[in-house]
Length: 473
Image (spheres, one colour):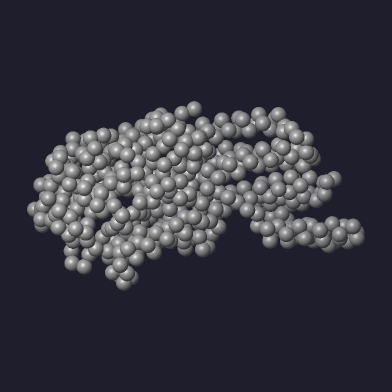
């Protein structure tokens, strides 16, 4: 089977053909580190983490680069408000990013480049664009000359004339005077008083936002990437500008595939979640209240291009599904203690797994459809639960089923453990009930059964002993 990817640039699904066989060069725009990330930011991080892990499941070696933007107007403003240097502020929120995302099992990027470590390369990149006629200096600023790049607007599906009209209405007169064309964008900005700045041929200043990603991505992955990813809101102007300046510099295709995740929506009107709108939930605040695996499930099991609605119902649905997964893993652990060791797994089990594997790969190969992939995971859980109802189970078959379930859950970043203390309390009540039955104290035995049933625990008295399982109330 071949993985298919929806390419934003061509607006269609395409067979994935890596530049180098068996390898994926992947760049994903990371956060601007002026605050803790909200769950809208985390959705992008989780979506591409899942895609990366699925590539690895399919046998690819993934070079995964995701940057930190640590030079930006928002960072300067936040650093002044917190009475920190811009580096101190960025260090603080980069550490927080790692802390928060590790709780939801986001794998570390192969490389996490920072802008402040690449100023020299940025200056050289901008100089090259000027020499090639793609950029010009104006009053200490350097702008990219969009009229020099014929493909400008292709990614976002906009014509240059449309963009000129829109930009003309947004810019003030002073900025219009500095530019040859209203759509031209900054590669280097003259420093204002009190701002962090570096020396350059055009005076003290700092990089523009877009040039940073072009320099860092091509430094670590080469002039042409397999995949460039990010949030839907980055399509224009950020990614459009990256293409123009990167291809103007190298004269090579910048990225073969462009992938963009959908927004997290918030509230009854489905408004996009963002800091600028003030309708956001910080990931770390949510993790203080909710099991991190519930959060990971919520963010990672909707198709990455679809909008993700955040509300109480969505959280409760994620909670219910995580509980089902925990329950089947607990039941497997319990039955493994008494499973029959035959040194030969069931042929039927192997055949079922082979069919489910085909279904899983078919679902995920279709543009990483996590929703359909998770449907297959629950088909496996259904089969395991049915298998566990048998009076005798084979240890080898159970271990095989357990291994497959855990492998698929790991792709979605889900590592689940039993609620040991609660389980011990249940087991203690079962021991007490068994003793009450032996003592012919049937009233107490029934009270315990009813108490557990009320808590969503059903008992089953079998010849092998009393077993239990959780059910939805």
